[in-house]
Image: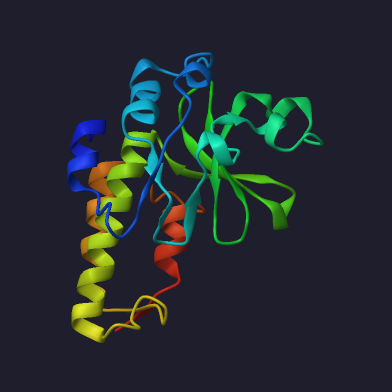
Length: 185
């Protein structure tokens, strides 16, 4: 798994800026030391392909989901809100196991698995940015938006994601759904 320092060295900060989280608040959560350190030392990108947006503490991120959405039921209090998907679905860290997931607003807030940890999410985002650059090189600058990738490149990114987090491509997961959207050539 990638460390906060390694992530900061590899992430394209000039293209995708970073957000930070309030150390005092993060320390109050029952997250692993690794997760807390990653949030405090590295934070997250402001945005990242595929259409993920993260919010700093000053913009409402790094808080319990029940604080972000006051009408959320108490069962959601174990989730730490960090951002949202392109559909506006909240991205959270599960305080009980440090998994990253989102709640699908269109399907009764079904929990959709993203990654087993935030460091694996960070590494997966780096791999996905590399994938986008590769498909643009092969199929032109609109390839990502047109979901146009070769079978070889889809195989390449699937193998990278699987190596980073063996659970990331399980049926119905975020990354599995993302890759299934591509036109295979």
